[in-house]
Length: 86
Image (cartoon, rainbow, N blue to C red; front, side, top):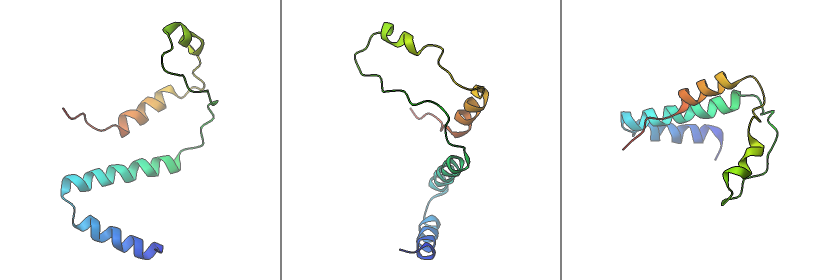
């Protein structure tokens, strides 16, 4: 399916959505755009932590934050998180 046909299909689907669902789609698109606009991560890749490890095994990861963008990262989390539903 080419880009024009895909855009037409999406437009038709969007016209059929309720306002609540349309808001979810808008949030999703914003999150995709934010990912495309962000720079590649400069964080070092760490191996995954296997389940069943003790807290003592995690001490080696303490104080490994890299960069000075903690405030920026928190703002991104606040901007992109969705409300909790209980």
